[in-house]
Figure (cartoon, helix red, strand yellow):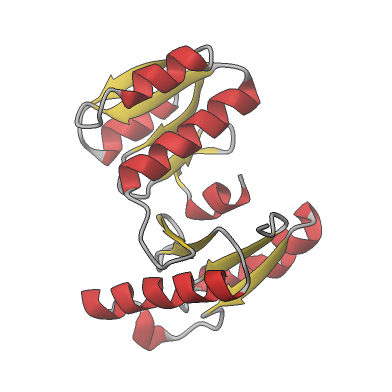
Length: 178
């Protein structure tokens, strides 16, 4: 049985880590923080180091018997999820799961995704009383679509999520909170 009230968050030595104590207190969540001290030398890292960090995150999740862990990018905008075996969850699969969660919680609504995303999003929307708006394959178009009052979530399939009820820009911290 896996723990559901504990999460592992890798802050990538970025300033976003300073938000964790406030989030834990305000939202009554429990989190294990990794790389939570700011390190200016880590603001850009090689791909291999990034992949190694994801594997480490997966190992930690396995040791703590947690289903998944989240790594934020340095800007706190994108999220990357690994399972307990250290395998990265694809951005499209993550976007589909988050879209389903958002539509269920809201009881419908609109999700915005680029035209390059698979048609699974239409199926998810249909099953949850929602609809899909397709955008051009760029951040500007996704943010513009997020300004529609019916949009509950916009996602690009590469770890970027927009929560229009909060702000119509990419926000990894809000994604972790949700």
